[in-house]
Image 1 (tube, rainbow, N blue to C red):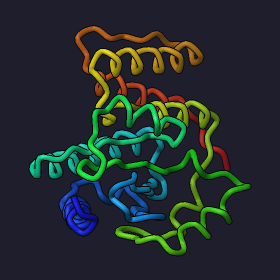
Image 2 (tube, rainbow, N blue to C red):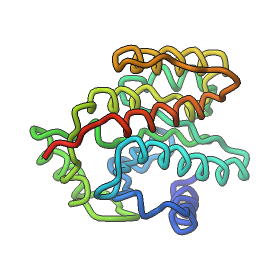
Image 3 (tube, one colour):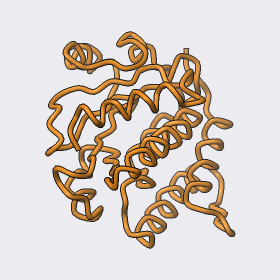
Image 4 (cartoon, helix red, strand yellow):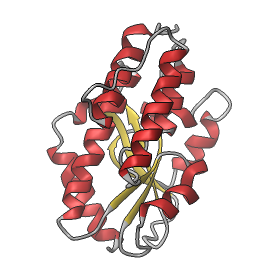
Length: 209
């Protein structure tokens, strides 16, 4: 797939997506070489809780993946750069054909990196929102767990199903264990378990001023 083709699909997904108002910034930074992974920056809009955003992000990427699949290609999501080699190895993706998408979002931002990120985004291609939208991400007392949930999300990484299930169960069990709750997996899909954890964090987190 050529970049222009992917870009057209991305624009159509943005235009049609029902919850686009919950996404504050969508941009592509860095190299546009489809033989490598693309750096997609997606941030929540102002006032949207991070768990809600994580659910919307999954649904947005699912929509994008469905559109790409109609061209017989795959969308493979790299949730965090530390897992890049793992995702590429396990996903079965074809370099130069399938779309490898590295997602950057709120775990990449803190008080010490804002200027670095602003400079990085100066030459980015922005498709929705504005750069300033990423600089006012509100902190919570559970940011460690929100970040942990984001970077370990393998729902769209095309892992073997057994491995995906094991990772989702173990990672969310860890979050629950440290926040006074137990994992309930009875007849639930991995996506439902992930979404329930997002809801749990949102119902528990306290926003900081």
